[in-house]
Image (cartoon, rainbow, N blue to C red; front, side, top):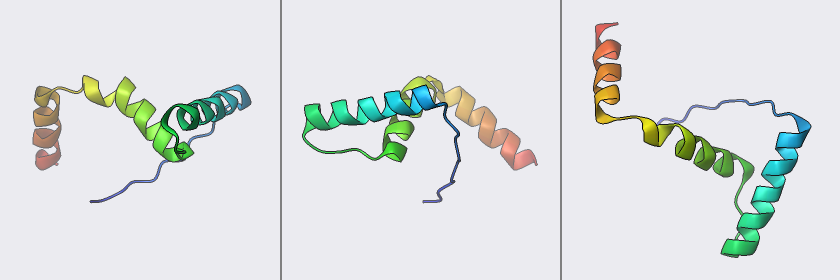
Length: 66
């Protein structure tokens, strides 16, 4: 599986909220979650599940043309 690294600069208040989410997750689940995993989960929930099979077909069709 190929991985792509993305660097995200966050304002201080957002970074603090992420830290609170990490603490909440640890309290609720009993295990810690890394910041990068937490961000991946949040991005997936917000954007990736909105992608339909039709979107993917268009993406791959356009990719093959180039």
